[in-house]
Length: 499
Image (cartoon, rainbow, N blue to C red; front, side, top):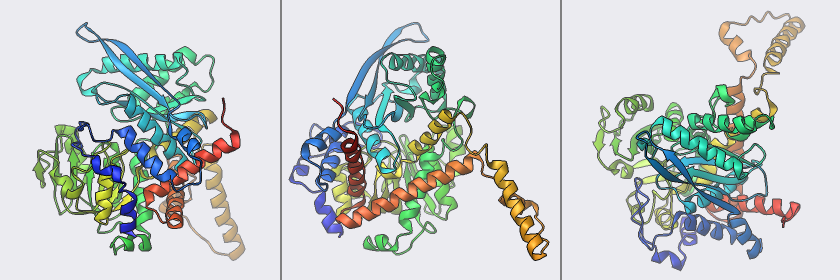
């Protein structure tokens, strides 16, 4: 079956592609497909396994609208810069559209188009009622002060609002590379300052906010936790693992190498380690470390926060490049940038499973090589959907104007205690509840509900993807794409194409 899958990724046109892309750079040769082309090639390949007419596939593939702006910024030294900024809305079959806001000096129109396309597919895979979007500002945040970043964020938000590109019912940005809760708080505050008096749901204009600003518990770790849940479900499938020569199910004993030790990489490694796996390598843009005996994610995070790098972490072999990326392991998790696994380096990987936590980390040429080596690839549009899923929960919280579980938490706890009392009276037993048992009886907190909802969404999507893979005889990426494309198609078929 592996050789059959490999053929799927070996069209004649692939032979012309070469790559000089690495995890730390978006540089490429003229013959390497750009990120948008790569996403569209995957789309075309998956589309060939559907019965959808080609003209409609072309409609679903293309981005509906992209805007480019130049934001004026007065630097701290008094000089004025004009900073490019973008926002892409891929498909409007469902509203609002949803997607992150990236601050990166590599961002351009093609990148936001590609990422918005992936967001449409990602939302469809996990059954979220959104079209896809993506945006960002072309800066390296490390080179700007907090005041400068705040000014840019607020100006960006205002320009989006003027153009109808932000709002709870229109377009809901979230955090992405280079942004976080701080930037989302600024976006929300700016939008509310101008539109809050006319929009009761103004707080839902973006997600990923601090808790005090309408955020939700569990959002920070959601993408990494979603990766954990999805990989866990795949690791339960002995039949699937057996086809790739993997004998042992579950996390215990599995060795892991992670590329990118930000929120996603850290939380994925944290939960996997707690489940019995062992992180043996970590790769960052400025170096990598390796220790076959295991690396403690908590201690590594403390070291990185204090030193600004993972290089030199005690007990590990340190490299000034990405050498740890290519060490033998069971699970390799690219959690950094797109196209980090490509034709130029795929032959060097020594993993059994590639779990894509980043957006678009593997090129078609790189995938062809990995499939020929018998590597099981778990696709990005499924694995890293945890972030947008919990963003959906935050959006619902803002629209409901109430914290999840607040109305039922005490009622559920009382109901459980009443049930024990009924049992005592009916049987003559005298069940006494100690402190530990009392904690088990409590009603669900907001975090409990978020984790439970995220687990349900990820597990259901994994099962649906595996079912499609078996039905069509394709690999998991093609199965996930097929599921997403068919859901988008169904939406358009039932609602019609608006002219």
